[in-house]
Length: 605
Ligand code: FEO
Ligand code: CA
Ligand code: CA
Ligand code: CA
Image 1 (cartoon, helix red, strand yellow):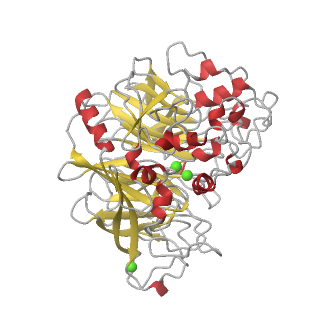
Image 2 (tube, rainbow, N blue to C red; image 1 turned 90 degrees about the vertical axis):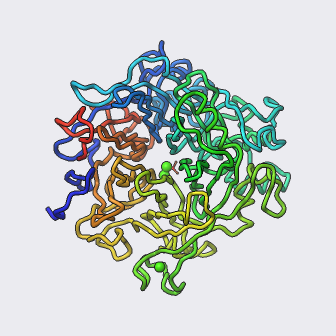
């Protein structure tokens, strides 16, 4: 079967071959169970989900739509009980409602309110079912929905900024809701960070703004056009940019949720900058300062890092959580520049390795602002935080191929970045290749690793590409130097996570190789470095999100199953309920049969 003799702990399973099953397909010897689906109850009193009879009041109490990031926060040493936190990235109304109920040109106010309630996050307590295996949701005081109606506190140096004030909030310190929450992370202090990503799509009439300064800022963030697709601006003028231009500035932040305190007010942390945050993930530096990494997920956008001034207090008490959260509000924001070490002529856009055998080099973090001090000419500090993309443009960072998730590896200390794809690289009028983004028309994406030189607070780092993704039969792919005859094809890396052994797990979105998206493992050290193996695949039209990989269980969020259909009248997927049912975004748990409940024996040994 072409498997090397040595088995890397955590990756001893038989590869799932590329396929187009309308199912979650897992390796032989494994079992799976749905944890929660769109519409399942979260908060007490939630009615049973009824696709044909939805209400906003019901959706406020039910699991939201399009689960993306999943965080699992154990509440005891064995993880018998945990808090599961999920992002609900976006709504697709033509798939959420019966075709004869939803007119995309004339949504009803109730349908719009359902969409507001279907966004945000869910917190549920889950227990390990020691008899049947898998995780299941239990009623608890922690269970909570956060939606577009939930008040958030604005923190950090842009709190109260003139650019955040609206008629509904003259203080610029209190924002209703969060949206387009894509990926995220669990912090060392047990809270969740979540990135507000493609927030521009929710606003109407941005193209009609005439003030040239405001219009340029809107344009740089992708706000454009007349009516929005969802037409929310008809029901609340905060979504109409002509009426409330600053409302656009109140999204695009990293938010923090404290799942252990169901009464806590969620936070928007302005010191981490405003852009299309895929996510943010924290590493504790040797001296105790907190470092947060975040990518701006759009073609040719940048990678950012934040370093706190204050020091981390170990522990997960309410006091430690409050202290550590505040570290994200006082520090320095940087943007990354990646420099290759091979002659430019050797990076020819073909994706073939340069003569030194690696896509690699060094990099630096360029400071943008610290507290109320700006390092960018022509920008005040508050402008750096609110219009971060425009400020970063001034200091020549590296334009990356869509930076998605970034996570520090808790075992080897390096940081891993999924660069999902960039179909515009090298096109006329667009940036050409560089060693960190070495392929023109990059359809399959790549994965970069870097190591800070000295410590996580350093302004210098060394980097190299771990994977140049695609069909391993193609010459433009690279699998960390591992034998390409043995690896699984992989395309469009999106979310990344680590198992307890330090193996990298990658979930994909947008597989350009003709098969479905999936979840893949890859050792990052030792003789199997680069040995990509597919662990599971997802149903028709779906993207693989989450993921969580512990000693006992793998969790994936199956986002937008059946999204390739034109509407709910012609579903292309019937997952997970089968028959003629409508598809429902859901979280799935997977484990190795017979090993459930034994620590160190995850699905994965
Ligand atoms: Fe929502 Fe960057 O994927
Ligand atoms: Ca090189
Ligand atoms: Ca993503
Ligand atoms: Ca994506």
